[in-house]
Length: 328
Length: 192
Image (tube, rainbow over all chains, first blue to last red):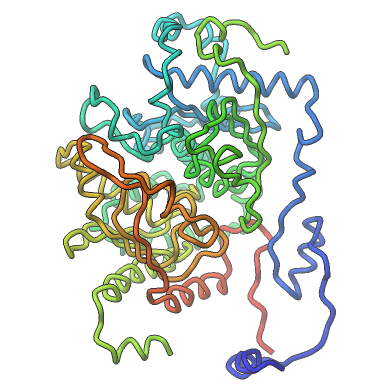
């Protein structure tokens, strides 16, 4: 026995025995559970099982185009073009959360999502975009004349992550944040939705508010700890009630970007366990899904998503093109 | 073993700040969060701290670094500082974090233009400061003139400060089982 192993055996008073362990990585969850009994490993579901790798049905591609269209629409934010992110549950074709960049103008959702009854208890009606309504909104079309879309997209956060200082400060001084790229805000919104739809217990909304109020480092950690303990006990009492009906983070969900995300956003999407990423335009400056980095190919990561590029003509950023449905 | 050595050696500034970061990590552990914590120092003064809050928020991007950055942005905006001044202040700040910043956090630290980072243990699954990617030495290292001040996309980064303490915290978390992990997670094996 090697010296260092012997040291461990002595320190922890282990008894050794000889046995066989699996030579190959588990290919199913069941195999993995079996393997973990003797030798805990990480489970990486095979990516060739992800829908779309082998092509899309006509129905699915239409759905993909429609969600991309929604992202493009959101990217036209108040006169300038920014990046947008739309998180979708493909099994129900429902929008889970969405946002555009909030580098220059923070939305008011930030600390108020749980305080306001903005998320109803019926998942079907929650936060769902009425795309037909948006399409017909004449205000949106007026805000972005076609000649403005031809600029160099300097307001797209993922294209210019270090450009937050150069932006003209025509907005009030408190409405900016260098890290609030579309994906970061969309993930925040999806987490807020999850907390509201699946509270751990009845006091959860109260707890959430408490947590917000005490977000300063000087807030009383004692009280927070107490609430946390109650929550923990409740979760143990009820078993895994809350886990069975909702996905872990964004497992199984898709995200749509107008521009290929920067490395910060691409990693945020890994953390939140998104299953498929769709983007329309490559990002030569800091694109992390093929242009500069290729994050989906980093073997060490604990989660891997599949990446798809949706080919769109650049003049789709002109408003008129949005009016026409995608047909091919 | 490591802590014994440190107690006999005069405590350096770096170790003192890292101990504060470890305290934040312990707070995270007490709240059933992955125990990673950090502090941000300006002019030898702790101006912000943060710890992992991913379980509580159900937002896997709420890492200690992002929390600590947001505390500062909120404070500085409340103080009415313009963006140029905020950038200038970040460029004088040093971060002490118990675990190597992940790829997302390393990118964020580069974007805000932090001066320097000290970390505890390496992060060989997600590390963005040398383990998987090296975002602290990002691009060409060119100086950018922005808002009238020069900024660098890179930051100085030193690892291995009180690494064993940081690892021990992570170990105790994973031994108790991560309540947030997808099932089945690793269950502690009974000792023979």
